[in-house]
Image (tube, rainbow, N blue to C red; front, side):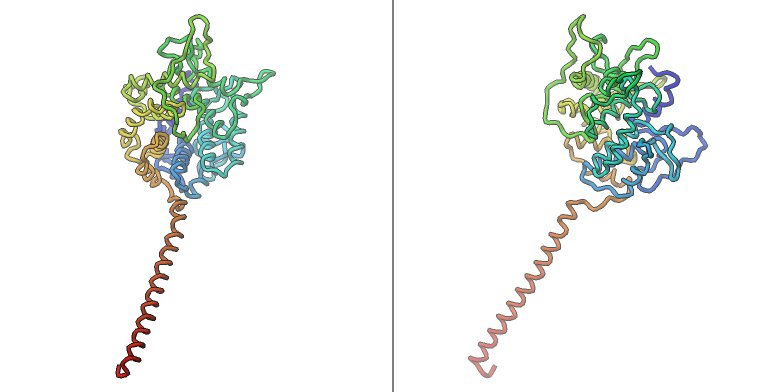
Length: 414
C-alpha cells in the first residue's frame, strides 16, 4: 500500500518501469523539444535518462557503437554531485531535488556496458552511497522511505560497478546502518507469509502495520538484484526444471529471507505467477481493470535467466516477443523497444529486427567494428584482383609478341 505522500513518486517510478511517460502536471504545458542524441521522439521529461540508458545498454550488447552525441547526452545529464535526474533541459542547472536513484542506477549500468566512463561511474556510485537510507534501502527521491523497485535497481548498479552491496551501508544513529542486501530483504515476504506469497516482494511495508503485501512489479524489479544480476543479463548456462520454493520449518524459520536464498525464493514465486497468468504478469491498479504488465514480465524473464532458470523464462520471452508490436508501439517507444531487446538478447534469440528498430530511434551509430575490419580486406582483395589482371594481361602481350617474332623469322615475308 502507498501512503499519500508517496503517491506522486510511486506513480512516477511505475511510469518509468512500465515504459510509459507520465502526463505533465499542466495539460496546456508545451512538451520540451526532444534533444539531438536522445533515443525516441516522445516527451523526455519523465523518462529521458531511463530510456537513453536502456537503449545504449541494449545497442552496445548488440555490438552497435552508438553515436558520440547519444553517449554525450547521457553523460551530460549527470550532475556535479554524481546523480542523474530523470531529465534536465539543455542549459538548465542541476537541482538536487530532481535527482533520483532510478535514473542514476540505469545510467551507471549503461556507462559500465559502454566502457571508458569510469570517473562518471565512480561519481554515480558515490551519489548512491550518500543517499542510502540507514535501513539499507533507497527511495526514488532521496529523503523518502525506501521501496523495493528503487533498492533493486541500485543493487543492480552496484553489481555492474563491481561494488559489493554487502559493503554498502550508510552510518546512522551513532553506528553502522544496514547494508544494501539488508535493505532489499526488508521488502521480501518470508516464512511468516502464506505459502503462495513466500518469496514475493512488496513495494513498501504498510505504513501503519508494517506488513508486506505481494506486488508483481516490485517482485519482478527486485528479483534481478536478488539473483545477483544487472543489465545486460548474460544468458544462463543452467536449466533447472523448477526454481525451489522457500523451505520453511514451522515455528522456527525467520521472517527475513537470507540473501543466499532470496533469488531462488522470488524465482519460484515469479514462475508460479507466470504460469498462472498465461506466461505473463498482470498489472493491477486501483480503480482500473487488470491488464498485461509487459515490463514486469520482462524483468521477471531477465531475473529467471540470471538465477539459472532460463527454461522457466522461455514462455514469458515468447509471449513478450509475440506482443512486441503492441508493447513497443510498433518500435516507436524507445524504452519498451530497448527492454524487449535486452530480454531477447538474454534468451539468445534473433534480434536483428529489434536492433534495427531501436537504432532508427536515435542518431546514426558509428560504423560497426566488424564492417570496419572487413573493409580493408575487401579493398586488399580488390587491389590484388586488379593487379592479377594486369599481370595476366602483360604475360599474354609478351607471349603474343614472342610468337609473332618467331613467325617472322621463319617467314620473312610476314
